[in-house]
Amino acid sequence: MILRTPPPKRARQEAIGVNSPPDRSDRGLVIYEDNPAATPAPPVQPSHSSGPMLCTYQCRQMVKAEFLDALSSAEEQVREYQSKMEALNENFSKVEAERKKFRDQFLYAEQELAAARGREHALQEQLLKEVSDSQERFRKQLELYSKLEVKLENEKNLHRKAESFAASAETKASELEKKLSHLSESIERERRRLNNELAQLKTESKFSVSRIRADLEQMECKAVNAEKESELLKEQLDDLKLQLSECLHQKFELEKKLSSLMFQEGCSSESNILVKHLQEELRNCESEVREARKLKSSYENIEILKEKLLEEKRHRERAESELSNLQELELNMRNVENELSSWKLMIKDIPDFSCCEDIPIKFAALQKEVIDSMMKVGEANAHMKQMEVALDAAQLGKRNAETEAALIKEKAEALELDIKRVELMLSTVNEERERLKNVINELKRSKIDPIGDETAKGTLLQVLYSTSVQNLIGLF
Image (tube, rainbow, N blue to C red):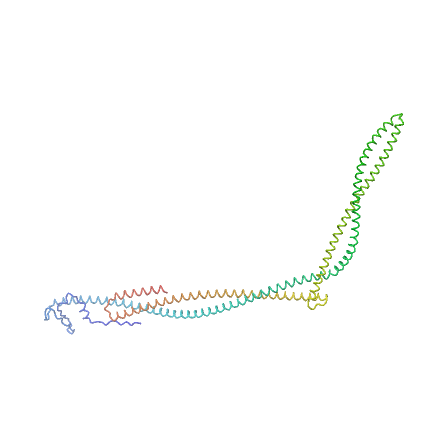
């Protein structure tokens, strides 16, 4: 706090001597007062005359009037100076109050700056710690993620292998079960049936081939003879048809003639003879008709023989097809025997297999292995699901760590901005403090030299006060 020391008061005579008008400073002035005890002013030596001048009563009155005028003007100046001094004191008290206020604000700003620096340091430490922790967690999550990926790949490979093994085992087991069930049920029966059929077919084929060949030869001969006979019979039939038509025609004519002759009376013996001849011819024609009918029936028998020949040809073709089927059956039998021998060899390759009764036991063991492999596959699937869940959790933790790191980075940037703003405020406060120090120093100098220009000091204080208030308002 700056202590105010009032300037020392000067003597009244000095004030009067100073404030005397300049147009009368060249005269020699002798002041006569009524009080003889008062100390007279030292005589001023005139510049033109060296001796004292004696004034009359009028001169004394004039001097007194001038002195009173000078005194009143001096008192007015004193009152003005006192009012200015009071105004300066008021301004000074205001400046002191503002200075205290600014000092308190400066101390508060320093405290805020120290607290902000402490908070900044704590936040930086916390930020560094959180960043290091997040980086460590992120690194651990990455390591765990890589390990989980490796484990997941291994589990997937094991799962694929187990699935392929289980599928192959199931297919093999199903195929073996089906084949063995079919084979065990049908091999013996098929073998017996094929043996019986083979024996029967061999005997039947021998007899049927010989019989068919003989019948075929006979039928071929019969067919050739029948064809020849049929041709001859056709020729005879044609001739007989012609003869029959002629005979019928003659018969009709004769019947007409006979009917016409029977109505005639007195027919001659020649006509009787002619009638007899005609009757004989009629009988011959009837016999020929009977022979023609017999030929016709024989021709029909030839047709029947042709049909029988065709049927025998069909039997021959059927026998040939049966022979080809017999050859196919023999081939199938050989294939079945080869497959049976291969199955026997395969069964012999099975370890701990001695008889056919061991097949169900082996199938039960194979089913058990398939069930165990399926259980392992299920466990592998469950483990893979757990690994996928852990991988999802690791990815979620990774995302959370990234978001936390981004938030911490944003907080750090905001704190850096706050620190820069506080530093700017501190720099402005320091500048204002230096400026106020300069103002205070100038005020101290003005107190030492009070005759300076008080109006300039007042304007300077007002300008500093307004600028400091504006700066502080702009900052805070």
